[in-house]
Image (cartoon, rainbow over all chains, first blue to last red; front, side, top):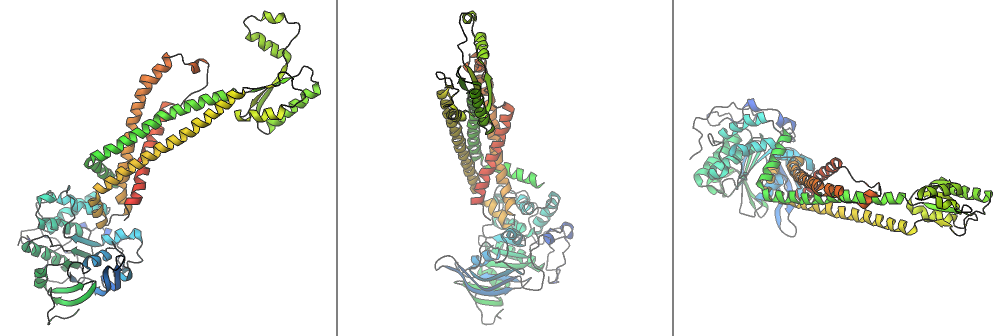
Length: 285
Length: 300
C-alpha cells in the first residue's frame, strides 16, 4: 500500500475539534493554526448547533415523467460521522449527493445541510454552501493543463484567498495527502491514486465541515483504493463529516462503518456498522 | 489581486483557444472598420445636406403698386410666422437695395444706367427655421394682396424637396446599417464566448464545485470578450488611419472637389474623436456580446 503515511512527513498541529476521537497515534494531524485566516467563519453559512450535518425528511426527487431519483428518503447523518452510501447503479446515490450540494432541488420533502434548509437557500448563497462542502469524484475532475499545486491553489483563488495564504496552504495540504515532491506534476504525469489525492487536497483546502466522495475509488486498483479510504478516514478523525458513495464491496466490508443502502430511490438498509451486504448481527442506525 | 487573476485567466483562455479568439477579434475588426468608414461618410453627407438646407430661402416679392398699409400687413404676417417658430429671420430688401445688389453682381454695372426706371421689385427675404417649413410659409403668404403679381413668391422648391428626401434617406439608411452591423458583431462575439465557455467547461464545473460565485466565474469571460473587441477596434482604427492619410487626404488635396470650391460648410468628425468612439464601441461590443451569452449559457 502506497499511502506514504510513515514516510517522514513534517508534523502539523491539530486544530482542536470537539468530537474528534483522541487517539493521536492513529490520527495523522490535519490543519495547522498557522494558515487559519478566518475565511471559514466569514462565509460560513452553516448554522451552529448540535443538530445533524445532513437531514433528509421524506425527500422525493423525480426527473420528469415516471423516473424517480429518490422516493421518500428520510435519514440523518450526525456531525463527525463516517457513512458509506451503497447501492447498485441508478439506485439514487448520485441524486442524493447532488441534492446535498444543491445541484438539484428536491421535488418534495426537506433537505437540511448544516442546519440550513436548502429549499430556502437563496441562489446567491449556493457558492458558500459549496465552500463548506468538499467534493471528490470518480473522475477526479482536475484541470489537465495545471499542476497539482495549481489545481489545489485554484480552489483557494476562486474563493478569494490572498496569494500569501495560497502559498502557505497549498504545500501543506499536498504534503498532508501524501504528495510530497509531486507539486509540479501535471495530472497526466500522476497515477490514478495520486490524481485522486490531488482532488482530495483540493476538496480539503477550504476546510470543509462535510466531505462528499462519489465513487472515489471507482477507477483505482484495490491497493490504491485502500490508501484513499485511509486518507478519508483520517480526515474524518479530525471532525469532518465524511459521506462516501461506493460500489467497492471490499472496502466497505473491511472498514465496518455506518452503511446506508439505497435501492430504487428508497433506503432499504441503514446499519450502524456493517459490511456491503446485510448481516444478521448488525445493529440498525 | 483579484483583477490580476481575472486577467491572467482571460489571457490563458485566449491563448488556449487562439483560433476562436482570433475569429472574434477579426469579427470585431470588420464591424468597427465598417462603422469607422461609415461614421465620417455619413456625417459628411449630413453636413453637406444641412449646409444646402440652410441656403433654402423664400423670396416674397412685393408689387410696386402695393400701399404702405398692405406692405405693413405682409410684414405683420411674416412676424407672426417668426413668433410661432417657422421663420428664422426675414429681411426687407427695398427696390433700391435690390438694384444695388444687382449692380454689385454684374461685371459691367453700366448696363443698368440705361434703364429708364428701376424694374426690380422690393422683397422680403425670408429664411425658414427648417427647410421643411418653406411650404408652410408659401401657403400662408401666397394670397397676400401685396404680392407682386408676376414674381409672387420664389423659392427653390425642387432643390429643397430633393435635398430633404436625400437627407432623410441617408439618415435612416445609416441608422439601419449601423444597427445591423453592431448586432452582427455582438452576436458573433457572443458566439465566440459561447465556444470559449464550451472549451472551458471543465474549469467552469470545477469553479462551481469549489464554490466560486457567479461573477467570479463570469469576469474572465467578460474580460476575454472586451479584449477581443478592443484589439479588433485598435487594428481597425490603425487601418482607417492608413486609409485616411494614404487615400482620402491625398484625394481631397489633389482633386478639384466641387463641394470644397463652392465653400460648402460640410465637415466631418475629427479623427481623434472617431478613434475614441470606435475604441469605445469595440469594448462595448465585447462586453455586451459576452454578457448576453453568459446570461444564457452560464447559469449557476
